[in-house]
Length: 264
Length: 255
View (cartoon, chains in turn cyan, yellow):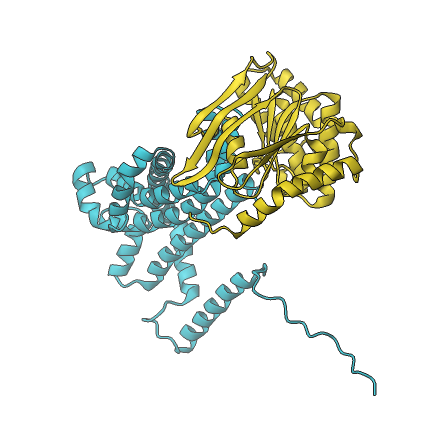
């Protein structure tokens, strides 16, 4: 009797994230088609969900009337100015905390104390400090971006490979060179992934600030639509926010690809 | 320029790692330091390079380094310590940038050291594209660029496979033969020590003390793989270290 010959059964594989193109888009399309079908057949009532094509029409109207840019431009400039202020300050303070033990001892507890405060709760205070117009909105967005950026930045500085810093010292590099040529580039991956989170928070706070007092802006537009129970316009506004989020995230991804080409 | 250790001792907290080490490192010589793991060899090297302060005793520089020397005491690390975001060229240039050199001078130095380490073709490659052996050659090129008076090598070949190690050892020997340099070479590999060392310092287990200093007179270029005399020296070293290593291995760590 001969021994049976068979293939060794394969039991490896899996548990690795592979890139699947177009699946994300497909999920979107399927959901939209389902909503369209549901609202057309009456399976989903008009009060529950607006019809996607109606939202699209509202959007088109918004664009043609010129109102889109009237709302979008102030929103984008608030986001840009507020987030830039918050991120710049956050990265600066974060690097200082990472570099100086004294700053760390003084500021880490403070950052921990302001981190959990819902920044929206402070808007009235900011209105008193900075006035009802733009400055209080910038301050709110900046403050909201600041805390996560600080935490991400100093963690990133802490994670820079100490052997590289020792190497710099052993070659007699001056302090400035060690910081700008070793610490900062080494902390860059962590800083960028922190920015991803803090910029998303900035969008949320932008809407909150605009809901509390603005004539124009995506937040004001959504609030108006909501109080009239105009679901089409509400959804048009929400879609704009989603797109903003996707654009920010894609922007960071593009920066990462450029700046972090060296990563394995 | 010579280096001198004058009864150096050191402890980390309650753990005494080095006890009363006195040693002369004469210029133009390679001094190998061998010893069981945890005997403080790397600590000793960091003290020689000024990265750590000895608890007691002194680390002395005898004589001035040559005038064209940009960084007298230069390390080569076990894990290469290359900046992953800089190319081969950029990594070498890093250590020249704080030295007030003109761009042309820097280019000359970079070109020269990359040629000496046979890396000219790879000037623009990033570290992630290089093999372990090439990475260590970049680190050697970087060290040569500052024209060191003493090279401090901390197990430079330990992270490499044994074939690459042989090749790099040949490279180091030919670099030395062309232009003798002073080096302190820490290793736990006795074969490396007898191939490269003019003087081999054997440390005991913790607290590290000098057990014996073995001198080898055969010129570096004439030492070959499987040489009988070297084999005997290596046997002798292993005899010295064997019991220490076994005892060090059986020790519990109190960290």
